[in-house]
Length: 327
Length: 279
Image (cartoon, rainbow over all chains, first blue to last red; front, side, top):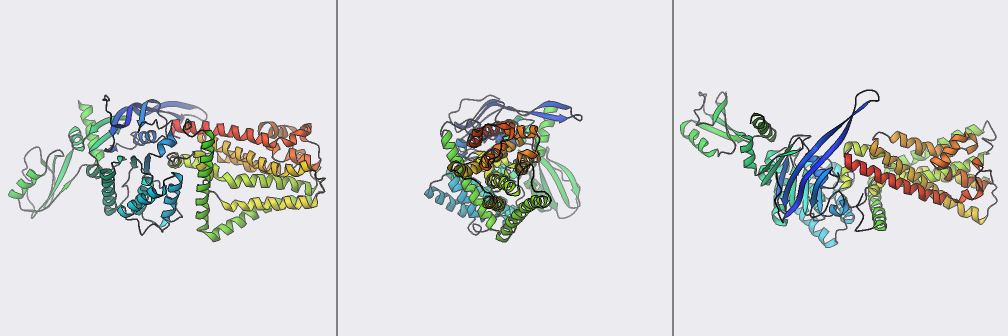
């Protein structure tokens, strides 16, 4: 992967590495030292205003990358810039320009009303009063926090708290927002609300968003670009549709017929993978439209209901590997 | 750490103190959300430390002197050590939780804030209930001052607040250094407690009851002797441990500054290790 010259490179990584020394106990006092490459020569650029999904299995190096981008960890090698700043050298200066939401670790004050956490941000980030008020009003309106401001954080639901955390990360007008699993554990309505808010934020304010997720729908609904990392290496960087192609992943069409019938005679490459009474499952390439297939089934079979299921990220990535192993 | 440059060192200290105050205010507010619990834990803190002194009182019901020191003299040492440690414990006593923050990953949430990490960790879980310990130490110190027949001079009067503040600073340095060590060994909070809580207990007794080697250690290696033993010996007109010269009684501020500087360096080294290893 080569880095092309790009004047808009807002986040720039050039052969960034992170090597950990892992010491393992092998005996009572004996220890074995082993080096682990958590991030292995990764290069990419993200332009201002992009919304990028950063995905990969657990332990792939996602959070290590995010920690280097936020200045928490110092890279072992390579060059890294966010908004022209070297994160590890100027961590506190960078902090004013980035927002971070850790999905499972709230930064809100547990025993205090939500608004108190925001007041602390106001003062800690030295946000000018007018700007703080404007940003808070906007977040409160769009994230529907008005009724929650005076409620102690410990009494908020998971979805409410996530919305609260996102608002806390945005009060100082960050140019880039890192979200680590922003929809994990949320119900459908909360997920939709969070996604809608992030879309608006990106569209209206041009905030660059980088999010890690296990939920392919997050990526589908939010990100024009997706990066896949595994074993510390960048496996894929491009649009989501291309990922399906690269992984030859398949979507599933679930068809309910009005009675039990032999397997549907579908045009290749679509094929029936399972039959259970009047319900049949058909697999077809994810990059293909479902419309012609649906049209054909609807014309030839007594169709009652249908739904399309998206492949999940793990399956897509697993397939990508199988491909690589073969070729 | 390299975060310097645009603000400068004094700016960072000012930033740190400001952040410390902001976070402490939040913890006090949090505590006040459970007012009854606050009152109870403060009283509990006071009572627990008070029992500590009761043990000494019981000892004196059997003997008239301990290591050549009378009860009011021991109360003097006890009170000085208690107040100095109590102030340090009140200010940054929760720093021993750092190892836990490293383990559960919540330290990372502090590293993305635009203020020094040390200030945030120092203010973490600030507990006003620890005033109970300070109050108990002050009470014992008051008793000592009321019963002792000290030949007060201006130097001795001046030495009192200087000694207490320097002592608090020395204990703060021990807390910070101990926390810095936890970057390397995350379950070392017990080791830290041995030096902090253990140190203050040690200083409650006169240096004459301990072996020379131990006294040397807490004078030259971990300079806890400067918290109360040396300056108190001057005020009480007692011979110094280790036959040190008279003027060392006035060195606690210098020792405190040196300790804080070393602890600061240790902290930087610890944080640097964390940021390169992430664990």
